[in-house]
Length: 422
Image (tube, rainbow, N blue to C red; front, top):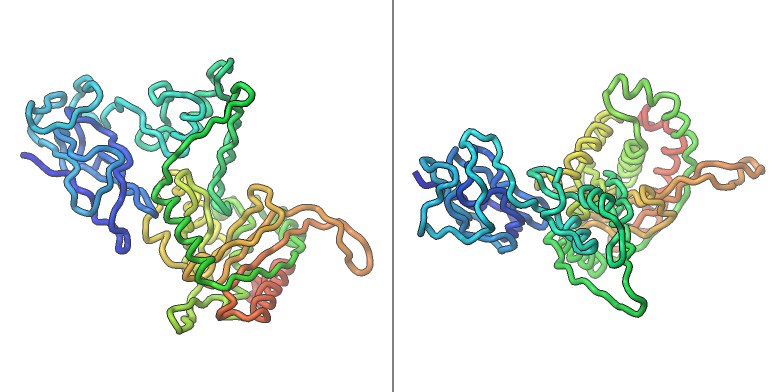
């Protein structure tokens, strides 16, 4: 019996995607629900599972092609044997066929490692071939860490490339985890260039950022917060907290709670513009900007006013893990009434974050550093953090914006208020 492999139904507002990579080749055995290929959209990477056990006998669409919902990508024969793709069945020429494997195999042995976009760029810069890099990611895909490991294991000589380790991805990242600039040994006067196509996600992020700046009247207000009370509380309770809840006590949950506290006091900061209307939201869905291997994504913590500190930390940890694996769903990246981004993860001292439309405000959190401040007429050292809140001046006046940020500052400097809902 022949079964067609089709593109899954894409989300509303996502008319097309890109076939990112095949994980099997014609002639290889597949198991029901095994991921055959990845479809990259401007928000997520969709897996295309096999509908039955059998053998992939034909690939109709190659990697890199643009596809839409329902397009036939390949054909599975439920009665064929591994390694026996029918001759003349329209099988698209591929690399040499893999050795036959048992149809009972849970996962076909990959014949060629598939690199994530960031890893592909690093390999190009390092002059590495995918065949020489062992993939350890989902579906044996090559990650940035795999490329770094391969480079470190390669002797660096004339004309070779050394890459510095890429920083770990953090859920609270204000932007995608950057790739360290490669140290390329080239003759003086040489002016190398490399052209790399944008991913769909990168194109979508670029489109939305330009849209935000061209349609909203963005203004930014700043303040500073003494983080010592929260640091002291975290130091005192972090071990007990982790033991009781099974998750580490971070700082982002306090910023989320402080944001909700301020948004309740000044609802217009939690509102959005729809044509000539202002939509006031009676719920608090906070987006957390995160750098993933594919680029910037903003998973949403929904109904944050109903979540405990532990609930928020657990959700953040889950989002962080799945963002790194590329497993966030479209529903987890859609919506949101307010956003928090944390450039402090990478050491940023100050920034003016761009609003995530159709939201009307975004909080930028930065690195906490010991600074000299005046307290009760005395110069003392305190761990200070500069906060920046960008807002849409079309609906949010300076008064509401400044007071909302002050409310966040006050709540963070007296965290007991967050726990007592004061």
